[in-house]
Image (cartoon, rainbow over all chains, first blue to last red):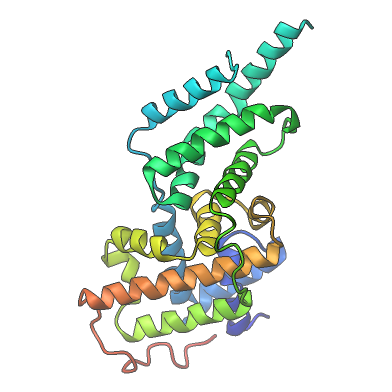
Length: 79
Length: 202
């Protein structure tokens, strides 16, 4: 049985899907019933969602695509 | 197959396999350079190098990761390997540091920080301030959804280094976000006055 300390150490590995299925299940079971670990899990999960949404995008993707294709064609690209 | 047909087939494969990743490579370049004009140059150079080296690409392997690797190598070369070496912390300690940080946030009434506060702008600023070695791993894993193993291959570092840098980066970002939230007056309690987590273990 995992204790809270072990869960805290592996919480990010768990959220990143980097653990074995056995360890993943053990952490899932612990977090579901632990009043100390669940808020931490929820905090980290929401943080990672915010981080994922921080994706930067180019303001003129079509212009950049045309520029890249132009450079490729000058190098012989013909598709 | 004639030479012309082989060349056309090569170009068609490049068009079908490499070009669809242009938006992801652009995002990655933007994350590295933090500057749209520099990112444009980097993306163009990345695609030119990829096209020239297309014969070395192994069909069926992860083309996006291959392009990220080229992009990063070009960028590092341009920066003369600046910031490449960083102190590497222990991943477990960083994870425990984050747990302590969360306890502090709870004590300040910021446990639901990411739900009631639009962190986008603060997060952008915090990402800008991260040392490059930390920023690139966050972008690869958290934004571009690469596994630790794929990120390790792209960054040419051991998987354990990816883990420790990633966890350190996340902790630094959280520290900055909590700081911003406090500055914005969102903390409802001074830290140290709440015992909501005490004695609640299973």
